[in-house]
Length: 388
Image (cartoon, rainbow, N blue to C red):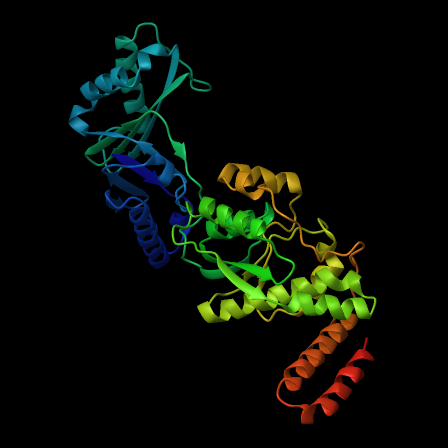
């Protein structure tokens, strides 16, 4: 039997707490289908073949313990057998931690002393150390039921996956975007990861890396699937930027296009925003000026959980959650990155470039419909060139 604890859920109003508890129970059952799950206020009980590694990745769980159960009237004799089975005799010092829920004729401190005396009488070489014991015996009394355990395994914490709705995550498969997606999962958001497959500039290796990272993240969100969106915008943009000697704006235009692709997907799946792995000042497109320009193109919230992190901090989380190794698989960088990308892009100039690209796309579309329309729209394309 396992005892599962949550913390943040307990702080919510009664209706929210019950709803979030139910979601947490449902999420546990999805990863442990053969386990019987029951609950009472503040505690969830699991009975059956529990896989602790899977339990460690269920958001909303702050910790869990494998426990033994007895009735309150059996406790004094049962605790000695429990200590023998759990190897307490191999320790030199111990502490006993008791938690009591319900109405009882004794006080917690009195019962703690009583049980500790029984253990000390049985294990003569054992001493008490309440600050840094070699071993700890935990006793949780809930009315007439008692649960004993020796340790608590840390869970991921946070709130249950799905209680806050959906977000679309721009997903490259590098170190930062998976960590950003994971952090929003921890805050209750189901993630729809989107990989922008940019014609002529993406590589099979990079896509394979992204898929490998998704496999690692699926331990936290079992239904996670990578959505690959093919797009030729960057190919067209690079051609125009080269003509206008504005190649330093390539990354900004590319990122704005990715935001729009993510927003399109978000609207289709009823998501409430976009997640990115951007960190302030980390690369050229992530300066304060450039983030301002990027946000201009989005009509829904853009969440950046790593905005104040440095690379070392992001890597630390990546290692802890299991995405670091697949994230550093060999992959090719973007072939469109200019030698000196703009770090202080001007919104007015970006909008003018996008306007020109839009008009040139119109020219291309009309030219395929018949020669009689080419002249008028070609003039519009020439006018657009003057906007830059």
